[in-house]
Image 1 (tube, rainbow, N blue to C red):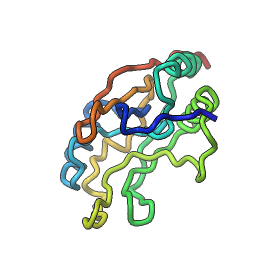
Image 2: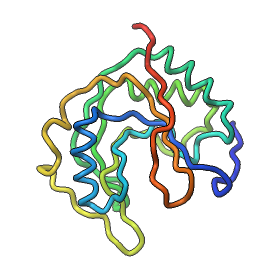
Image 3: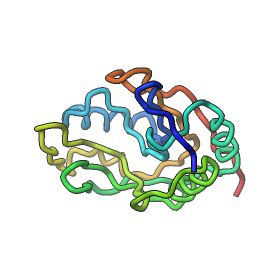
Length: 175
């Protein structure tokens, strides 16, 4: 198990896959309409609280990416986690396999609940309830399969600042 430093003293980071640029733009527009300020459409592979402190783990991610071949991903239907999160489901065996490889390489603690790949569209915040999402608002091209060819490291330097991609790990493994 990896010990983590308190998050208040360091930048917040996560590892994620992203849909193609045009789909990201369209989804960001949908997300902004649902109250997601500074939205970065992505499929989280390792969430901020799971990542170890420091940078020593970056080499392990590079090794995993180098051993992982690009794989197809498809964004599916609108779904929700209780009344907390609305999301698009994510389909593709490679997503689960990559998550498993990252868990092993980073020595992550076992999850309390199974990993559910998803792309968050909206969150309930404070007194604001979770907004409904009209499936027709999701562009048709968002549901077309795409090839995941890289894993991104996204960093938020300070609370309230937007996340930005700060590193890319190419998926270059063979079949």
